Image (cartoon, rainbow, N blue to C red):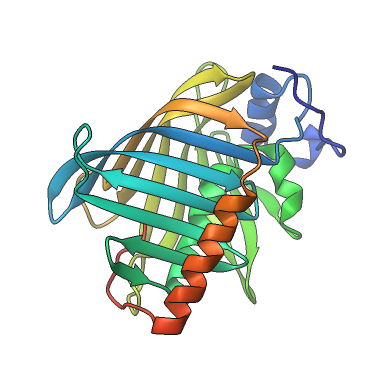
Length: 253
């Protein structure tokens, strides 16, 4: 698959050493103009200490919005469906009939968006003011402007081989009305898919829990597929939630 080149490549000299090393390995021919990416695959999620299997399809307008559809169940049997989204600056989480919106959900969904978008250099220009700073030979920080403030994320990188990112860490709200907690996304099993070096396994863990909250293995990747109808569906869900009011206590993804 031949992807279009990004219009404004990023100079490696402007970046921390581990970031430049990763770009040299994963984007040796330059950064491609990837606007949307759709990821689908099997998942395991913990609810009330029970690990449940399911399937997820995540559609990202990189650096701007996303819509994730989750189905919890075995085979054709569905126990519950979920929706997690960030669109037009607003986050929403829906699990079954339980819906949660609010500033905490906005912040959590924004970080979820960037946990994926940060892997695609062509997305970095979508957020004015995004800035990298060095930490160590295998770590770097990125400042993400959000609302009237900013979110600071730490990326860790593999010290062996091509130096791909291994983890995305930030302080994130988990529930409406709650405080921030350490939140970590581990990137594992990197492979080349549709001409792109990508992690094919994602593991999400909260700092106060001993085991992962969410695990996903990618089965399919589609690049630059239109997702406008799904973003419109997310907007409708947000409008409906605002009309009925927020549902406090729902956990974010």
